[in-house]
Amino acid sequence: MMMDEICQKLLDNIKNAISETVSGKKIGIAYSGGVDSTLISKICSDMDYDITLLTIGFPESHDILFAKQVNEILNYPHHTLEIDSETFPTVSSKINQTIQTENLSWNENSIAFYYVSKLAQSLSLDTVITANGIDELFCGYNAYREAFSEGESRIHQVMNEKLENELKMMKAVNLVASEFGVTILQPLLHSKFIDYAKTIPISEKIHDSEDLYRKHIIRKLASQINVPEISCTKRKKALQYGSKIHKALLKTR
Image (cartoon, rainbow, N blue to C red; front, side, top):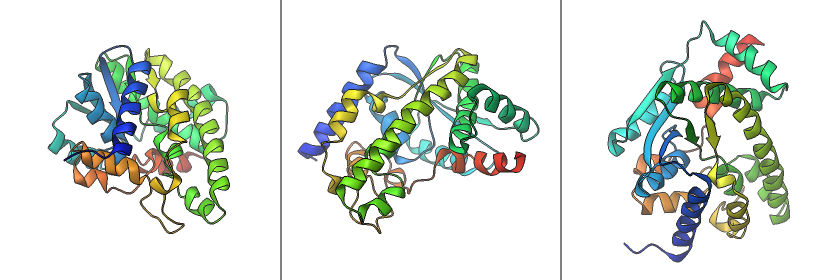
């Protein structure tokens, strides 16, 4: 099947962003089984990176179960780390002191990447790639549904706010990861990729304020490069919910 022009251009730009961001060939990929992390994994594998999928979460959490299900089709090297509920309060408190903010989302993400980095270190990996940036640039969040009814300029305003927050948050995440000698890289937050992604029409990202799937061009590209269908059609479940970290953190507060 011929790839249409907009998907081909998107694929080329993702590959360029990865090439410019990721120098080593041996990498871990933060993996949930969802469309974003599976798309990045498939592209990195096709680019001949030596990839290992890394999934973290509490036992029986959605991400651990779903990631295993999707990878039964892909068959990439895959490791999981189950969070120990006994030591979780100590870890979350330590991370809160490291990143020095009460922002719940920052704490949840930093905790998640603490465990991702711990898993990476145990496998002698010092670089982990994430798909951060896709939800911000391709209208993945529910906030874009609310913004849609207010018009395109509001969508762009939300996008810029979310990008600014994400770039700052990933600095906090890397502070936590550095304890394990691990660097967390986000190729899709590369400035060139951000500039390109903003030129893609909003209609390729979100259809209306009732749109529960969003990120349509990402899903379309994923399907065209043979990402498993269960992943392409998967609705968003944020890392802190899919791993059950959100629920556990609220119990400690």
